[in-house]
Image (cartoon, rainbow, N blue to C red; front, top):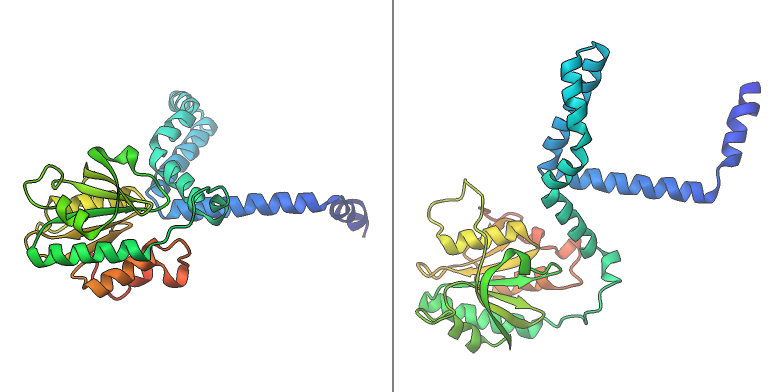
Length: 278
């Protein structure tokens, strides 16, 4: 009872509402950081850092002076090294925060009306598929793609099926590359995309499909491909590819993937369920 009266009760009496809020927010942040890290390659790097810390303390305890000296001096530049090593993960984490509901509060863009744009795109893709005209279309979502694109020609034109089909006509100045769609407009044409680093990708896929997968792995976007060999339609999201889409399925998927109010029930990942991924 003396213990409870002298230590436990005063401790709980000293706790204020702000303390509870403070601890809850910190716990929420730590939980989400750990959850995000588990989905990236950073978890393996963190394990390696943990091993180095253990070795450093063990070497100090065993008085292994040379090893301890090397590890201590290495850790002194560890913060800068971590920022460099984890740069892709940090960037994706900040982008994820910007795409959250909280980030939407700071958005000054008017809600996009997608139905007309998707209809025009589907008409163009249908015609390209019938004539086996290769096409590569990237739909921006929350993340801007300027820093991952190379080259390209600014267009800033309204979307129409005729415009898209004309861009991809073979042997025209803008046909070789990707069309970037931003906010219901054709922002850029003939853009060069980063190729996928997936070494397990089948050899049947050419540069167009590899570029589509590459940009979907590097950024938050939806990528549409029409094969010039077969005329088949594919869509890439988050490094996943779904092939042999019909125009009806394509329209359904684009509406789910691009709609700003898309929720978990209608998320694009649900569309991949039960289908062949590459």
